[in-house]
Amino acid sequence: MLNTFHKLLKLAFIFSAVITGWTSVILLSSTTFNIEIKELITKMYLNQRNFIFNVKDLSLLLVKDANERFSEKNQGKIPLNNSKLD
Image (cartoon, rainbow, N blue to C red):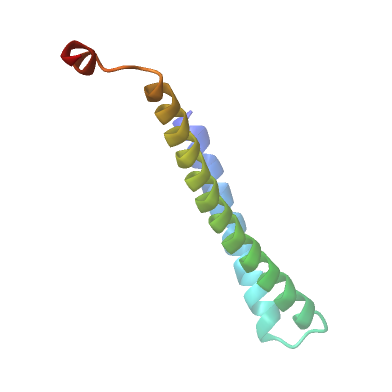
């Protein structure tokens, strides 16, 4: 399994390197698609940033939900120490 993971990681790295190199060469040379490529890269960056913010927001909501459910569970219980004092 570790060997398969290593091969997939290597494939992803090689693919990323090829796409990055190819994009760099195209952007450095003046082509008719420069504007479209730059717009697409900007969209990719914004989607990546939004994804990270959405993960952060999801994490906060999950923590709030867990806190609410734990507090509801504890509200129904009466501590034994307080009932002995009455």
